[in-house]
Image: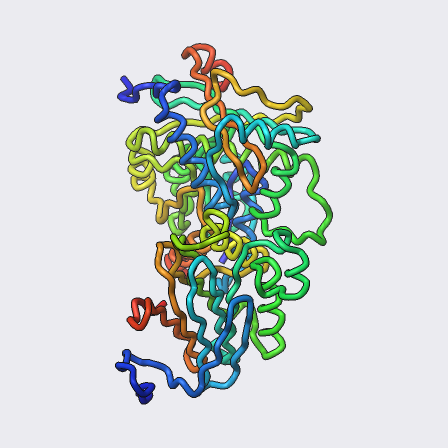
Length: 178
Length: 126
Length: 174
């Protein structure tokens, strides 16, 4: 079991913080080292797409904000990972360069909540993001193996590269493993 | 494993075929029919292990097809799956009497179909 | 004798039931963002369409209750839904008319079947093969209208007409 980060109560199977790769909003990352953990925080209406190839031991995560690039084409050019329909293909392409093969890949979705405090955000962005993720994944021939989506609470997600576990937290409390 | 898809919608048949292709199931052949009568002709002419059939089709419906298959008793090992918009209790009861292994209600997500296929494939005798 | 009571298609509940069926079908099989809309929004969306519409009609019988459900949607929405349903690569050649008609027919088939299943959980029903046609005319919102929807910001109109037993049977070939 990893040692807990100083000052925090340990959670079951808490990954070692020193090997965390933080994925910010509108970012993606790939881990092909077995001791790494991909982490993204504050998933409200945003969706995290988590990929894991157990043979190549490649883990990849995207944290996207909006469903479609046509909502803001200029931003999509500068930051394609901010949108589901441009971010997911980029995630797949990037992960493939590290050896991920689609037919072996497990896909998990997390997020897409309808958060009450979403100033300036259009209605039902969370739901639209979930639908966009499913649509793009289907276009690329991928099934969604598990998900923890919807609701009203923000989530934090850890994707453990060693074994592909996806751990979902509400604040500090782990609420699910999918 | 040889699969026969029976649905009067070519789009639906294409969707089901795509899901089959994306699974890791050991599939040798996928054939299609647009109605029950065409399905019977295919069953008479080649080996089929798994039948996926809609219910509401012109001419011979899916239920009529399954009744005929039961009556003929030629394909005792054929694994039967219904894929239909009709999710009523009556239709499901009818399906159970016709030795239907799985009942998948439309609309369905690709994952749900994949899971039904895996379940049905587990019943196919090698 | 059937235990199915014909629904009161003029009640708000009828519209909610049909709309619920549209949402289930659109989200699950087409990954579409779908909402009910009021007359004003529907008219605005419809007015922006400068193209053909497709209309699909499905006849149904559930016990002694028979009728026809029709869905009207712009051609662009039909193409959009076809792409989502099949996972079509935009680089592939455009789908032909037969594929579009098939898709719209299947959409209507699923909406009708989902609605009927929810309306009377115990009773089986039969559906005719959908009949689909092009029209340049915008669909009219009228007495038969039960749901006005926005799917991916395109309009969809659903109408249900209850028919007398003889005419429904004849129309559906039952």
